[in-house]
Structures are given as structure tokens and as C-alpha cells.
Amino acid sequence: MKHDIRFVAIGLSIALACLARPAATRTCEAPPALTSIDPPGIYQDASGYAEAIKPLHAFIAQVNKAADERDLDCVMDLLAGWARGSALLTIGANYQGDFERSWAGTDFALALLRFPVTSIKADQRFQQIKPWLIRIAEETRDADRINHLGNNLVYWAGLDLMSIGSLTDRGDLVDAGIARARQGIRDIGPHGELERELKRGERALHYHNFALTPLVFCAELASRRNIDLYAENNGAIHRLAAVIVRAVKDERSFSALTQVPQQLFAWTFQGDLAWMEPYYARFHGPDLPAILRARRPLNNPRLGGNVTASWGAPLPD
Image (tube, rainbow, N blue to C red; front, side, top):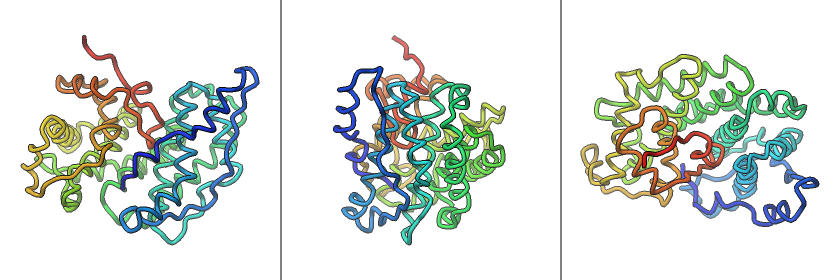
């Protein structure tokens, strides 16, 4: 499920207020915690979705801006504020709330993981943030409205579990996340296709790319535990990545998987290509520098902000 690009814009009033203060006295105040989240599905009611999700997307942008500025104190203040308010722990009747909470938890954890873990754990505010993020992960783990789908949303839930589990030293959450990532890896066919995402019709290419993102980041987090998800199912992640790289270079190449004409969102081959940063840093594929150079910095509101800064590697001259 994708959002209008306006949702990644940073609240200008917040930014100007912070910049106007001297560094020594600057404060970073969290907006009121969004305790309940119940937006309608974006495809069912786009305008209703856009209005309902504004507070969450504004807060995510604020967190990511602070992380981009390497301001750990601000990130901690923001997240501790929402932790004290038990934000996002109540989900309404609409399934979209489960997805948004999963993506938000992933973003918060990855934003924190941009900083030294020793600094995070030494901060007293982390004792408020930690149990809150664990609750978000546990709710995502147990969300039947995600678990039954068997598509990209399960893979994204896996990244939520792995990122929060890695940050909070909860091995059980990491293991549950790896299991979901492995489900996605098993879903990748011999030609890099995902059958459930092909059923998206004109959005199939977009969702192939969207599904790849959590699998790459899960593989990166798993590598820190000496687990090579890239090798599983005969290198399935590489097959899916090759499909997307070919499509970025020539969208017509996707016709090898479906004859349905494809429509992309404006961000599909922009911020949603953020998976290429860690992938290039690890494998240095020769096709990636030109793609990355034309798009850097790659920002993604589900991955902690500026992915180029946190995961990227230098490109060749």
C-alpha cells in the first residue's frame, strides 16, 4: 500500500521552530501521542486515508528529520513522548491501521539503529521507548489481518519484528521476523516473480519492488547474526532484484512476467528503490551506480529517513 508523496514532507513549522533556537537551548517536543489509528484503506477512500493519516506521517517525518541531522537527543525525546502516551496501540476496524503501525514501528527502530547502540541503551529515555516498541512488534506479530495475507505486508511485518527485536535484544522477535522473511524468499519464483504480486495487475511491478525492500533489509539484519538470507531458495532475492534493476533500466522488460501494462507511482523508482543502498554496499552490482547516482539521496519514511546516509556506500568515479 503506497501513499501520496506529500506524506513524506516534513512539518515546516516544526523545522523552523527548531532552527530558530540556539543549539544549546533547542528543545524537541513531541506532538500529542496518536493513541488510536484507524485510517480507511487508501484504495477504498484515498481522501479519507490522506486526512486520517496526517498526524502519524507528520510525526514520522519529524523523527526521520532528527535522525538525518544526527540529533539523537531529539529522536529520543520524540519517541519517549509517544511511548509515554501509548501511541499506536489501539487499532480500529480498518485493516490499514495494522499496516501503518507495522511500518511506523519499523521506521522508529531503524531511525534509532542509525546511532551507536551503546548510546541508545545508556539513555534513560530508552527504558520508556523499549517496552513500547516491543508492544508494537508483538501486536504486529499477532495481527491476523496481516498474517493471513501471505504477501508483501507479511514481509514488511517481518522487518518490523527484526528491526525492533534487534534494537531491544529480543531474539524471539528476530526469529519471528526471519520466519516471515523466509516466507517471502520462498515465494520468489524461478524468474524472480511473486505470484501474489502479479495479481496486482497494473501495479504488479510497483509491488514487486515494494516487496523486495523488506526482504533486503531483513537479509541485512540477519547477516549480523551470521544468517545468509541472500543465499536461500537458490539466491531468490537476487532474482527479484534483477527483475527490478532491469525494469528501472527498461520498464518493458517486465512484460516477461505479465502482459498487463504497468503503472508506477511517482516514488516507485525513487525513494522505494532505497533497498539498492545496502544491496549495492554488499554486492557492488555494476548496474547500480548509475541508478543510485541519479537518485541520491534516497529517503524512505518506512526505513528511518535518509537511507543513503545510513546504508549507502561510495560510488565509483
